[in-house]
Amino acid sequence: MSSAVELRAPGPRGTPPLLARLVDDAALFPPGNAPMPDAVRGHLDGRVGEWSGVMGLFLCPASRLAELITELIKVKPPKPIALSLVIDTGLGGVPKAVSIVESRSELLALRMVEMPAPSDVDEVWLERVSEFVPEDVIRVVEPRRGGAEWLDGVRRVIEHGSWPKLRCGGLSTENFPSVDEVADFLSVVSGGGVAFKATAGLHKAVRYTDEQNFTHHGFLNLLVATARSLSGRDVREALASTDAEALTAEAKALSDQAAHAVRGVFASYGSCSLAEPIADLEGLGLL
Image: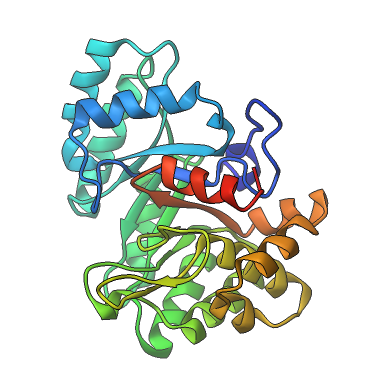
């Protein structure tokens, strides 16, 4: 199976190891909801832009795969787009979607398949995921959050060799995990020898409260918290911090080896915008 390290090949301008391929392109997803032509053009522009080294995979729902291929045929990308296929058509739709992607290898390179888990994350379902997704493609499974059963599901996902996904926000309060829940998740994952992917809600580098009174986790908080989880320090403090200066200083103090270790756990997160995280990172002096 592909690894988090392989997905983080360095980009131009010597992107810092802590940030290489950190931001997967989720332009098609809420709240951005970009039309397919805009999403494809934005991704292709981002691949050759100043900070292309921060950009990761292009995320596309399985239900929109034909639309994506039609658009790529029009624009003729110089090399295939590295794709994460987000399964929104049920587990049974995975083999056909994978087959379609693999039949268009001049346009798409399948790197990852992501899907929500059923409520019980049972062994039979996880075995089918392993059967349906090629061995050289990363499997990302999102257990439904809530209670101790959620963490048991995360453990089962890890035991089957898939990456667990952490949803960090959404359209209601329930979609935002608490500091304690994220800390517990990091404790399980950092001890499990596997990477995880984050999604939704990570709109800024540092924790903040929006105009709807939703408190968002910051992706820099999550990076620093992951570093602390690997070194046995206070994870909850890092997750709860709104001190951008202190978080930035701690991130900058990480050695390249420590940064690689962090990203071996926190592999990437999806964002509907590349410009927003880049602007935040530049403003903090991290790029």
